[in-house]
View 1 (cartoon, rainbow, N blue to C red):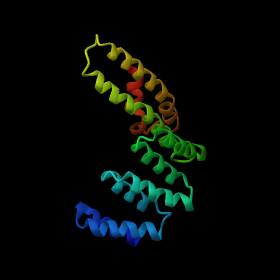
View 2: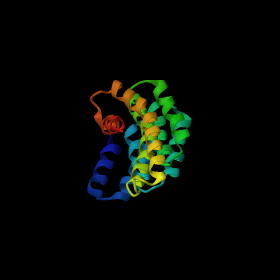
View 3: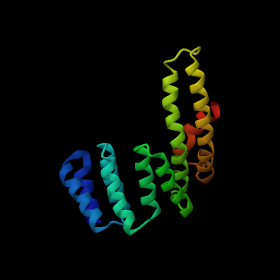
View 4: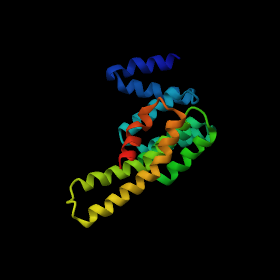
Length: 176
């Protein structure tokens, strides 16, 4: 508890980011079960684009305890790395375990299809509608949305009030 409070103080408005990081790492080492420390160190690595370092850290934690939270974090990291096959495998384990993270894992699996499709949507916004590539891209978008749809629908079924994880994406899928 003391390390958590110290991290909060050091991290408040970036008063002392070096001490904050030291405190988070110490907390993670001494209390690897505390999701607070894992979440903060993972956010730190992600914000700095250090996905490989974050993956090494989470793999170390998974070696001693394959809890769903760690698997979910690993799925997110693999997603960030665009290793979608491995991300799906990690998220499937979260879903199989059930529990509080299942809806978020389903939504993240939807993201695996949805957000790459958004890149194609952006590309299409620069193309002329008569361009043959435009129609080919539209077909790819529709296919990706159809792949994402059941995952978002399952997330909605599991957590109907958590629209942050499925709302905008599912609405866009339905509109396509």
